[in-house]
Image (cartoon, rainbow, N blue to C red):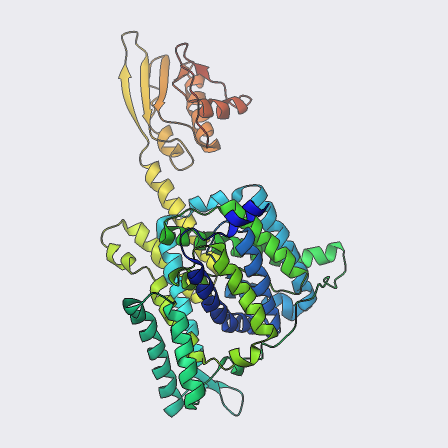
Length: 512
């Protein structure tokens, strides 16, 4: 048991100092994010902070991607606004519990591998859109409420001070690593700006201006809702959407961190960990969450590669709530805004701008579409789904054009149709147009050595072709059909009768 825990937490690519310091940097960045997302969802700021602590701790210990940070997120907050407003916070807690159960089921069924279906242009669009969203969200910190309670842009000295502190933060984060990498530049920037503001008497917004973060330990709490069918019908749609959004964002973030660290995470393990985390937070009065791309990038860039950094970030956040809330509330928002601006700049795939004229138009279309949906609708799951659908339709269209046949008549007067390309819904019509039943001889052979049947539309296409020949008293033989295609046809034997040639070999399929 001791060796298991040692292997689990032993830093493999970074030293303990980097892990701890990067975790503390993330903890500081988590505070305003958790508070802001709580306010968006219409719940107490402490609910968001407790959520970040619980989810961050559990996923850091059990997750499939060391170094990735999870917590309360805007993607989940947007989904639950209507539920909280309509039915109250207790139904939210119940929905989060059900969300966790759904995510655990997805992991157990090993459906996390479906993330492979997300094409690279969709990843580019997702990352770029999220970078823009992160950057745009920071401009809200340049607004203040007037006497009427309406937010308006800062003017005069407060605006200039805010801009100066944000720029100074970004300069420190950008150029300090060129001098030393002994400590994370983001942590040095936050501490430097805090010292300037606190001891220099500079008037500017602080974390405490958002809300108080002081509180006790999270307490176990069973959701106070009726345990009946009506309750399930109320929370199920929200739980399903939250589970889907959470897993999509988590798995895409996992893929991104994999690329940055040149290591491989485990998607199904992460699904189970996210589910366990949300199940737990639902019983402790949490709002649900998932992986956070911004904080994950802060952690990785600061040197966090192991589970220790995520654990330190979570425990550090709890320590802030219990003992250091007074001091954390003194941290200037300008320092955290500058940090998030640098995260946005680092998140954006600038290389994607160089490939616009070097890749097919439909890839550019997918990339731009996903980015725009993410930016304007703030719905990451919808953006990714639209991107995957467009990519799938383009793929189907391109493959539909690949179906073709080579025709020849052998010495026995039998006409051979050698089919090339996949036979599926998009190519079925073109396939049927390749044959000439009226003018063909009494026997024909359709050779599938270079083709395969993919779906029911392909079966139906063969059925229609053979039916046309049968009406004319002619016989159709199928040759070189692979095993999977034969299985499809055998299942449809009540619909279609197929004659196989005697020399048709047996094929085996290698499955993953």
